[in-house]
Image 1: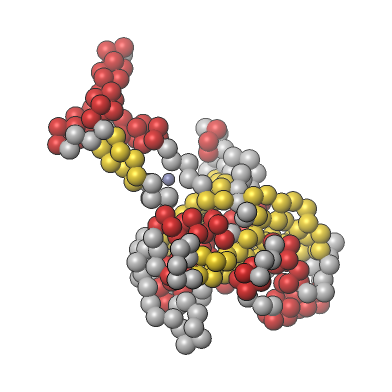
Image 2 (image 1 turned 120 degrees about the horizontal axis):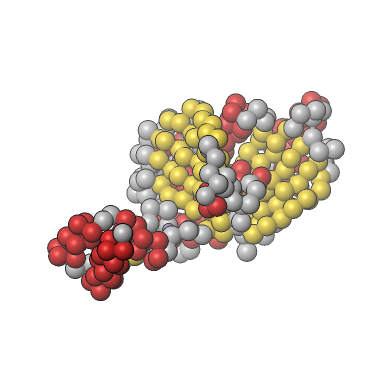
Length: 302
Ligand code: ZN
């Protein structure tokens, strides 16, 4: 089962977040039928948003949007405080040959562009406040570096970010996925930062250790080397979308009587597909007739 942990080291001057997201990313890849390189890009952003979302309070929502000028066009991912994560890419077929080192050319399909992070709270309670939005230009396109750049520039938190997705040629395609975020808080010892940066730089790839069975705690241990740490919190993370048949019905209802009548007359049904999870909802003629009957009822009441 996928898991995320939050920890701390060196008298709370270093904040640690790590997650294994293999099942979450496999579910996303299955739902969106992404090409191998698009799968790697989507998996990295889903993992990144899960890690960034570790600080969410109840009813908070965090959205990461990559507006890319490369073939993938865009990547959108959302995390909520209950550990649910969802996301998609605009062009699931985007693909390029591997780079000379054999790795996916994620920076090639992302290209340049902007990374936006939106933090919202109280959304589901109707206590909606102005969201916080931060953005940075895409400088790497490999995405982990872009998350680190965002944290440093927009939130003034110097960070090391490792994100990885390992794929195979047969279903479920994703064999390992996960990441680590090491955030340097105010008062951190410069010498320690150098040691951590050095260890992170030499650490084996996260997917290599996840593939060997590593937990999120193991990922932190690998990234920190000799530096001691303690775990403060852990939670399950999973791919989960808030869409439902009922929500599809209310969205079709909101189109208005005229639109619903013409759907009924022309197609005898309505079909809606959720962009985040690719689930398709089919409303048959009797459902559409029901919407019209309720709409009429509502009108006569007023
Ligand atoms: Zn959905």
